Length: 215
Image (cartoon, rainbow, N blue to C red; front, side, top):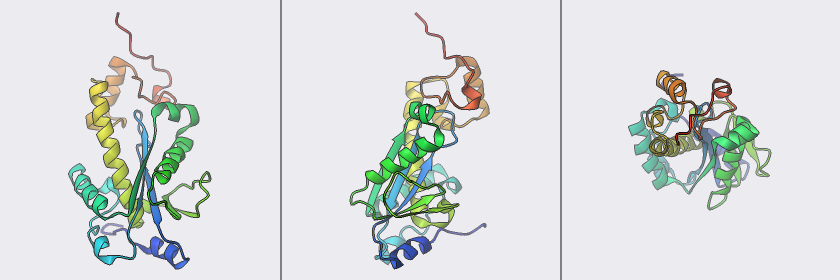
């Protein structure tokens, strides 16, 4: 619904059950044709209303401009109790599939938290590999503040990496489209073929030949 902002309802429900250090978990890049899937986990200071007020503008990263995400990342970093980031590269996506690779990235993000989380709020999926109590929330990045914050962290980190990978693999336009299937990306694939960070298991790439090796 337009105008809705994420709240702390899910976090407060977990606190009412006796849990502290509640992490919101989300990913970025799941639907791309190239690059890693990046997950983030964010623990907010739920007992401190002052710092939380700094995050009033936080919402699902997909609803924000790149400049706004960057500005909000600074607020999240200044406010959060802990932030963890996890990555699953394209080869891991090809080997295990996108859903298992996404769960691996999320688990790595949770394991990177210091202090460690005691409860997980996860956008859409569950993490059966984690022994932590958890709740999967459909559209959690829209409704849950911790997950929305994690969505921003994951998106900004991944976009930064795709801009660096654009320099490593020029010609594909990764800095612009971040690995998603756009017209420019399709044209580059037709001309150059896939590069090492493309997800060869994804249908549009499965039958394309790699770029030629010039000697």
